[in-house]
Length: 297
Ligand code: UTP
View 1 (tube, rainbow, N blue to C red):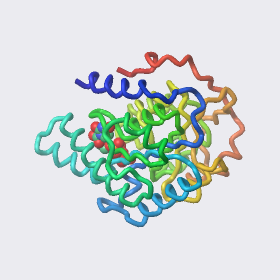
View 2 (view 1 turned 90 degrees about the vertical axis):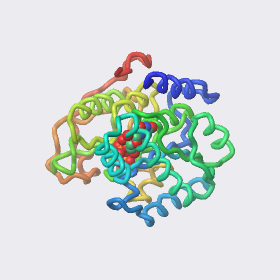
View 3 (view 1 turned 135 degrees about the vertical axis):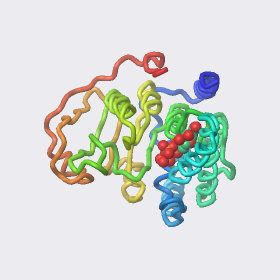
View 4 (view 1 turned 90 degrees about the horizontal axis):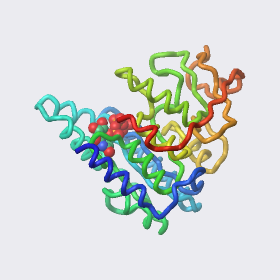
C-alpha cells in the first residue's frame, strides 16, 4: 500500500508541466514550516504565526511566489502518542498526524493574505494557483511521509527553492541542544545533506532538521534548499531576497567547500564566527542524478 501511495505521489509530481530542472526558479519558494516553530508547548503561538504570515504576504507583494507546507509539531506528537496507547496501528497514526498537520495548515492560511482558502490535498492543484499569484497551503499528504518530504516534492514539481523554517538556525554537525560544540553548516552539497540525514536516521531521538526521504528528493533533482530559524523574519526576508542570511544553504555546486567535521569550540548559533573560522575543506561532488539510485526502499 505504501508503495502505491508513494507511486501516486511521484506520478503527480513527475507529470508537472513545470520542468524540474537544476537550478530552480529563484522567484518561487516552497516554505516548509515546522509545526514546532508554530507552537509553544501544545498551544499555537499566534504572534509567531502572524509574524511569519505577514512576512510571506509582504514578500508576495514584492513579486515572490510561494507555496506552503505546515507541519504537525507537538500537538501532532501528543495526538499520535495518545492513539498509540489505544492501539492504533502505524498507518492510522500517520493518518492522524496528517489530519493534525492539515488543521495547523488551515490555522496558518487564515493569517495569510493571498492564500488559497482551503488546505490542498493534491500536488496538481498547486501549479495554477502559484501561477495566479495565490499561495497554496498544504499539510501532510501521504502516510509514511513527513511534511518536509511533501515540501521537497512540491519544490521539485514547481521547480522552486525549498525553505525549511524550524526552531533551529540550520543544519548542525550534531544536535546543538545537547552539544555546545555543534557547528552550523553555512553551505552543504546535496550529497553531504543526504549523508548527514542517513546517519541521523540511525540515531533515535536525533533532532536532525530533514529526514532521509526529503534529502533524497532534494538530491535527486538538485532542488536548492535553505534551512533557517523561524524566530527571525528579517533573516528569512534576507534569504528570500537573495541577501546574506544566517542558516544553511544546500545547493548544487562542485565548488562548495565543505567544512571540516571538526566541531567548533564556539557556542552553537554563532554561525558567522564559525564560518569565518572554517578553512579546512573537502570538495564533495554530486553523483549521477538517477532517482532509482537514491531510493532507500
Ligand atoms: P510532520 O512532518 O510535521 O512531522 O508530521 P514532525 O517531524 O513532527 O515535524 P515538525 O515537528 O512539524 O517539524 C507529523 C506526523 O504526521 C504524519 C507522520 O506521522 C508525522 O510524524 N505525516 C505527515 C504523514 O504520515 N505523512 C505526511 O505527508 C505528513
